[in-house]
Length: 623
Image (cartoon, rainbow, N blue to C red; front, side, top):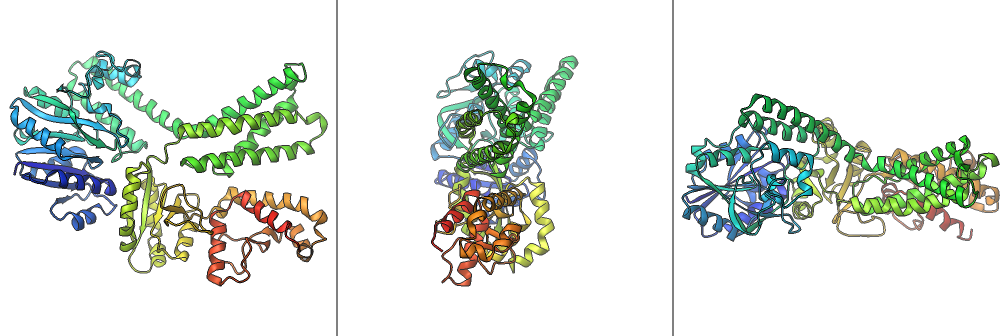
C-alpha cells in the first residue's frame, strides 16, 4: 500500500460525507486506503460510512479520545508507506494529493507536506502558513499586534505573513487539517503526543519532525477547501479550556527556562480568562449594544431638541424627564425581546427589530398621551429617537449577521426520515448554517418514544448545547405539537418542507420551516393580552352597533372572550386560548383536518401584526 488517508470524525456527518466523496475520487488509480476513526459520534456518521462507503476501513471508539490518541490508533492500523492526516471538514482534489505524494517521494529530506487552504468562499486561510509559536510571536498574536503588521516577518511570524502564500517553500509548522508524512518519520517521532487532547498536536509533531533534521514543505500551488474549524466550532467553556490547556502543555514541554515558563503560564491563564469573558460579551453583544444605543439616541435627541426648540441645553435635565427616558429604554428593550429580535439568523432578526421599534413607539406615545402635562417631555424626542433606532439597530444586525454560523442541531425522526434529510443537511452544513449535527433515530411509535425518552432528549440538548431541533417532513402533527410544547423556550424547531403554501411561512433556513409554537412564548402571550386591551378600548365604545360584537360584548369587555383566536374546535395540544370572536377566516366550508392546519399555522406563525390584520379585516367586512 502506497498511501493511507486517515480521517478523524466527531459529529460532522454531513461534512464528512463530502470529504470522503472527494477523497475517494482523488485516490482513483492510486494504491491507497482510507481509514476513518470515529470518536463516539452521535450523528449516525458510522451508519452512513458503512452504507455508502463500505471500502473505507472503519474504527470506532467508545468515547471521545481526542485528536492525538485517536489518530495514533488509526495510523497504527494503517499499512501505507505514506500517511495523510486529514480533517473531516475538508474537500480535496486529485492534484493536491498527488502533488504532495510526488514531492515527499522525490525529496528524501522532506518530513512533511502541507498545502494552501481556502474557506468555502475561496478566501485564503492564514493558518496554512505558520511559524513556530515562540514567546515573542505568541505574544504578538495574543495581543493582536500581528493584525496591525500582517506582512511583518517579526510581528506576524506566527502566520509567516512575510511569505508568498502561492509559492512552494519551507515552513516551520504544518496544519493537521492536511498533513502528509512518511511512516518512517512518523514512527521515528513516536507519533502524536497524547498529552495534547484537541489543539497543538500538529505544532508539536512539526517541531519534532524538524528536530530530526527533516524539512516541512508548503505547496502554495495546490489548495484544498477547509470549512475552517467546523469540526470543533464551539465557543463554549470546554472549547476555551481545551485550547488554552494545549498552549500550557506546549509551554511546559518546550520552555526550559523556569522563570519564563511560569511567566508564560500565567499569561496563558490570564489570556484564557480574558478570551472567555470576551466570548461571553460577544455572545450577549446585541442586548448590551442595543441598551447603549437606546441611551445614546434618546440623549442626543433630547440635547438636540433642547438646544434647537427650547433654546435651553439643560431643559431635559428635570428628574421627570430623566425618568421618562429610562421608561422609554425599558419599553423599547422589552419590545425587542418580545418580538424575538435576538434570534441568531439575519433577515428575521432585522424584520423583528423594526416591528419591535414600531410597537415600542406606539406604546410610548399611548402612555405619553395619558401623562400629566408636567411629566411630558416632547413627542419630537420620541419621533427622532424612533427614526434613529429604525436605521441604526437593523444596520448593526445586518453587519453582524453570520447566517446562523455555528448553530448546533439535533435531527429527530425514524431512519427513513433522517436519511431523507441527508442531502439537505449536507448542503446546509457546507453553506455555513450548521457546525454540529447529532441525531436520534425513532423506532416504533414516535410519541411513545418521546414520552419514554424525554429525559434523555432533554439531557442531550443541555449537555451538547443544542440550539435547533430538525424533524423529518413526515412527522405527525400530534408529535410535532408534543415536541413544541415540551421544548418551548429551549430550542428552535424546524421541519423539512421545501414548499411554501398559504398556511406555512417559509423559514429563514432554506428547505426548513419553523414549527415552534410562537403563541406559547411568554412574550407573545403578554403582547396578545396588550393587543386585546387596546382593541377593546378602541372598538367597544362603538362596537355595540355590530351584531357579532353585541352578542359577545360582555365577554370581550371582561376578557373571557378574545378578539382573535382559534377556529373551533381546536386541538387540545395547541397553546391554550380562551374562546374568540374572530379567527383567520374562510373556514366555513373547511374540513376538520384543514381547520386543524389553520389553527396550527396561527400558533406557529403568531405575530402582533397577524392579530392586527385579522382584526382590521373583520372590522371592515360588512356585518
